[in-house]
Image (cartoon, rainbow, N blue to C red; front, side):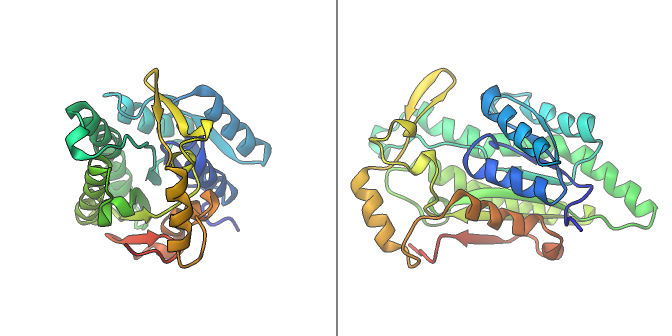
Amino acid sequence: MSKLAGKVALISGSGRGIGRALALKLASEGASVVINDLDEGPAAEVVRDIREAGGKAATCVGNVTDADFGERFVQAALNEFNGLDIIVNNAGYTLDGVIQKQTDVQFQKMLDVHTVAPFRILRAAADAIRTFAKQEAAEGREVIRKVVNVSSMAGTHGNAGQVNYSSAKAAMIGMTKTLSKEWGRYKTCVNCVSFGFIETRLTRAMEDAESRIVIEGKEIQAGVPGTTLHSLAHMIPLGRAGKPEEAANAIYLFCAPESDYISGQVISVSGGLSL
C-alpha cells in the first residue's frame, strides 16, 4: 500500500532539482502534488511525468516572493484536491558576495525567498490546517500533517561569501522550531533539513552555462568556482556530492508516517560533512 495515499502535498520550487525529485517521490507513494516553478515549462513537465506514471498533480506557477503567492499556492491544493497534508518549503537560489560588497537589495532578496516566502505560505495554510484538525478531532480521528523546511549547512554553520543566504537559512530553523510548538495542537509535525553539497544548478561550476539562472527577468550567476568544487568533494566523508534524489529522500523521511512523532528537529544531509 502506498504510504501517502490520500495525502495532498505542496512543494515550492518543484520544477527542477531536489524539488522535482521530491515531487516524483511523493507522487509515487500516492500523494497528490501541487508543483511550483517560476516557469510553466518545467512545472508542466513534472506534472506530465507524474500523470503518465499514474499519479495526480497540478501546477501553481509563479514567484514565491509575490505577496499573494502563499494564498494562491494553498488555494490550489484546496481547489484541485480538497486537502492539505504536506508542505515543503524548498524554493530558493543564491546571490553571493562578501559583506562589504553586498547591497541592501542583495541581502533582502535572500530573506524574501528563503524566509518571508515560506512564512507567507505557512501563514496562508494556517486556517485550513486548523479547520481540518478541528473537524478530525470532533470525529475522533487523528490525522498527522507534515511541514518540512529546507535549510542549509550555511544556515547552521555559516559560509564565507553568503552572509545573506546563511542568515535567511538560519531563520528557517527558528521558524521550524517555533511552528512545531504552535502547530503541535493541530497534529502537525514541523521539521527542517539542512543540506550540504547537493548536485543542483546552484552547485555547478560557475563556468557551466547551466549555473546561470534567470530570476525576475535578470540573469544571475549562481554556481561554485571549479577549484572549490574539487576541494569540497575531498572534504565529504562519503567522497562525493549528494544527488537530488538522495536529498529528496531525506525530506521524504519527514513526510512518511514513520516520522509521525518527530517534530521540531533539524537533520543534516551532508554525506558526513561537518564544518
